[in-house]
Amino acid sequence: MTRQISVLILVSVMVMSVMACAQQPAPVVDSPEARAEQAGALADLEASAGGYDAMLDEGAALAASATAQALVLELGREPTEDEAAAVEAIMRSAIGEALTEDVWHKAVAGVYAEHLTAGELAETRAFYESAVGQKILGLGTVIDDGVVTALGAVLEAREGALTEAIDSALAERFPELVEEGTDE
Image 1: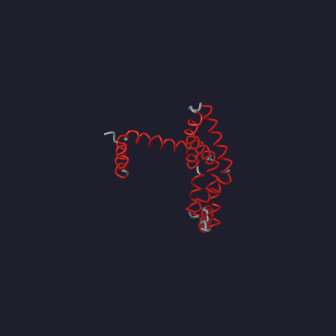
Image 2: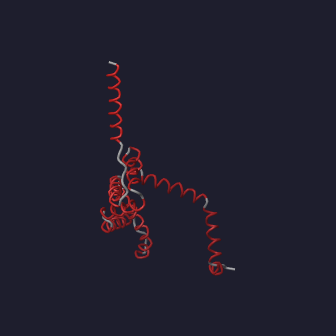
Image 3: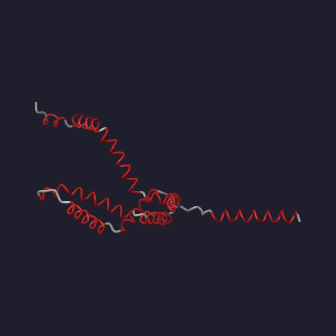
């Protein structure tokens, strides 16, 4: 009876060991094909978390901001809020036509595949598939905005020193600016 229990325990341990090994993913061979597959899956995760739409929104906001000065000159006035919103919508639409989601996906996946091995991409993908990874992906713009706000506050607090350092360095590099700007 003791022998049977020992054999049963040994068989159980062996079965559990085999099951544990079977649950761990096999190492990913680093090849261009494996990188492309893993990078594409990672780009899919980013897209499903709103990465493509966020790119369109950010691009439209930047393009509209860059266009604002030209609009003021052309219109001879500041655009209304409705006009500014319309310009941003126009920019978003135009960017979306030039950078379709498929083009965006291929570009993002290509950058990932260029800089990470297939194994690193698989690990990254596993992380972003986790609950914490999904949360981070979902908070992408919130985190980005928070960092921009925090850094903006630091720069604002140090505006005097920053301005002085820039003015001093520009005056040293371009002495003709100092001579032209002097009223003495």
